[in-house]
Length: 280
View 1: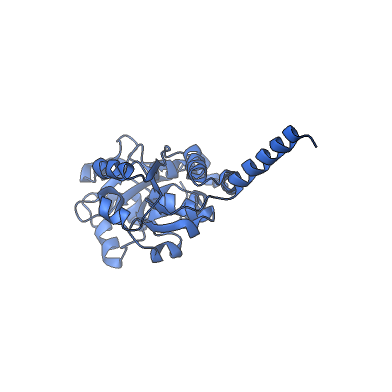
View 2: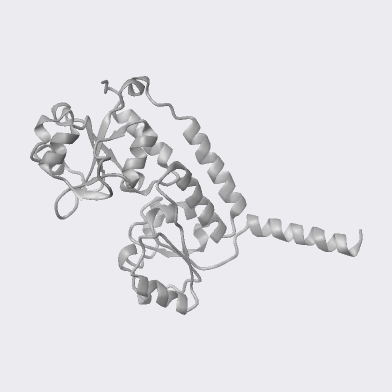
């Protein structure tokens, strides 16, 4: 074998290895979906910390936390000596992120729209940042297969169920309109978002409920109690809706409902299961 050919082959092998195995680096992941993807790719041994929204898988809850993604502090992040910081566009404040960059931390934003393709893009971006492109491609293929195995119920093809996502916070309940993860999730499931006429998250009003007339209410499991469920049915205007009359409430894990990540096919399946007895 000639020397030039040997060099070429060696470079090809090294390139292949770098795409298969991640370089050892200390990683902090910010954002529940980003952290979930890190675990999916098998790179969790590189994780030294994550933020408080990183709740899946269960192992992520045992990881040191550096605060909430929107209110990070430079001191908190730097305390775990990261080399790579994976963030979502929601991470901040911007001043803190700039401070981290100035200290030499490689800050990579995982930015993709809340769409089916966006799920694949998120996985690809995280995989690339971790030098795990091959693992990323395999993960994407697995997620695509999971989507392919889903089937929209026949009854839904005649008239999709009207769903309303209600986010219960410390203040007034909020609903999810266009451009939100629940909106994308509903459409992928074959359902309709009853408040697709609004953009983003808005306060829930009696007028909005009366106009929406949802067939089911979707909420997150976190914090859901019998009292909070009754509070939903007691909202002004809710009693006259098909959802309230049938007491039809769908509960999803917060990351499934709000993250639009690798387990989105599972979220869709859960919606189908919990509306199994619904018919137009």
